[in-house]
Each structure stands twice: as structure tokens, then as C-alpha cells.
Image 1 (cartoon, rainbow, N blue to C red):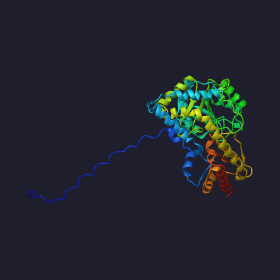
Image 2 (image 1 turned 90 degrees about the horizontal axis):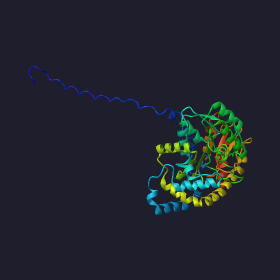
Image 3 (image 1 turned 180 degrees about the vertical axis):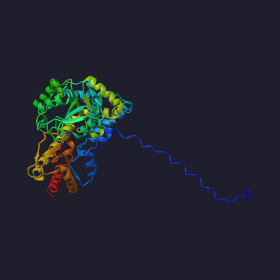
Length: 411
């Protein structure tokens, strides 16, 4: 130590400065404004083995043709492994498109393979159409009530959703014409056959009127048909896409999810050339192409699909009848419901004093679930409505589930 200097304690080193942390940019407005699917939320809450679940739109897993589908995959991998495991074209495998086109032609809509774009489920087809057709702020006309996931797609695209009044036969043509002249929409979205959520089917004369309105007023029609092959009685009704005046302005969506297996995620759209090309460009940006292996296996399986669908229809028809037989005792006096000729869903309206969203926790306590009707409305909802899926449970399970529902609604 130097002379004359007193000893002092060493001063502590200064603490390192906290790094500055600016907030990240916010989510897109469309992501902040559109919520998730209430159906998916309900399924997450009710996925217990003791639960009888009328909420989902799930095909019956015990009816999947696992052997036939496995054989199709094995044959593809054995015979064309390099093709099956390689990238494919965005438009879809030619063999699958040709087979789907032949099925559409046999149902009264002349179609070639080049008319089709294969999609990763028909839900993707809706997203591609929204990308190709809609600017933020554009108007989309929808049914009331409407398929919930379509409302999500159009909402994420920034569209303004306007419900069109209708009746037991679907959208009212006069109300549609007024809405088109008032709102100037880009498109009208419909599920004309065994609609989700109501199960109703638009009769042929009403479809002809809708096609004529679209021709006069200049609007796209998106005709979604995931359930059309699940008919249990009644006569088939022609697609709107096949009717005079609608040929150049109707996009037809199809799916193998309800008739083969949803896990394959295979759908398609049939559209006029310019719109189809725009959707193909949107698909290139989304996923390049739908899985090649799944497409080739499905193309092989289509040879036996009709026989499989016949077996499924017989079982689902019995389950629909079981639900219809139990509803008079399960629902409170004054309730109303339809009798769907096919599809997967039954729609009911309880007396006005009932709120099915508020009553859902009581149902869950009784180990039964349904979907409240309110989320299916683009406009003012009807809180007394609910959707029941009848295909996933056996008739015995349906009867027990309806007994539980009765206890929940009357407790």
C-alpha cells in the first residue's frame, strides 16, 4: 500500500444492463377476430369413455373398411412405390381425378379429370376459394343456420357474412334475389343436401330457382356436398351445378371423409377453369399438393366404394330411426325437429324458454353432449336450437343418451 493511503473496500462491479425487449407485432386482425370451433371445444371437454356424444360430426369408426383400405395402400406401395412416395402435381393424381370425374358424370354432371382439383379435405377447398375470390370486406351470403367451419373460413378471409332468410326447404329465392341486389355479394354458400346443421334437403324446384337467380344477378354459388351419398330414403336431387344457368358460376365441393375415412383428408372441387386455376395457385402456396400415397390408395379403393357406402347407409339409417323414435320422450313438450332423409345430423328447436348453451353443462353432468345451435348463425341466433349427430352411436347407445338428455333438460 502506498504511504499516506488508507485501505478501502473494493467497490462492486456495476450490474449488467437489462437487454431491451420490445413487444412482438400483434396477430393479424382476422386471427384476433375469429374464434375457434365450439364443436371442437365441446369434443375436447366430452372425450370421456362414459360420455354419449351427439356433438361431433364423426363417422362411426367401427364401420371403417380398414381391411379394404389397407389392401389399397399395400397394393400401391407394392406396385408403384416410387410414385406413391414422391411429390405430385398440385391439381391431383390423374387416376384419382379421372375416377372422381366418372362418379360425378354418373350422377348427372358431365365432368372430366381436368375439371377437378384434389384438395386436402373439402375444408381446404373452402379456404382456397376464399383466397381466390374474397377481398377483405367482401360480402358472402350464407344459410341461416350455416355450416360452422364455413363461417370460420369466410370470417378469416375478412368477409362480411349476411344470412339469407329461408324455410324448411332452404334459402328463399325471393329473399336471395333481394339480398344480392342490396348487398352485392361475391358468393352464396350452400349445403343443399342433408345440410349441416339442420339435415334438411333443398328440393329440385327450389334449386332451379336458386340457379336462375344466380344467373340473373351474377353471383358465385359454392355448393358443398359432403353428405350426398348418405341417403337413407327418398329420391336423389340433382346438384345445382348441373342446372341451366348455374354451369359457369357454381363450384361443387366433394369429400371422401364421410364415405371412406376422414383421416385420409381427401376432397375436391369442381370449378370453371379460371377459378380452378386460381385455386391451384393458392394450393401451391398452402401445401404444394395433397399426399400422393393417399390419393393413389383412394383411387384404387373407389372400385369398391359403392358396396361399402351401401353397408354404411343401412347402419346409419337404423341409427337415424332410433334417434327419431326417442326424441318425443327426450325433448320437452312443444319441441320441433325435422326428419332428415340422409346425412348425419338432426336439428331440434325447444320451446322459447330454453337456452341450449346454458343447459349444456347439465347435459355434460349427465354424460351426454350436443352442440348448441347459436354458433351456427351468422346473424341473430336462436338460443333454443341444438344439433344432434346420430351416426356415431349404436341404437342402444342412442336410446340411453336420449334418456340422459331428458334428465338434463328437465332437471
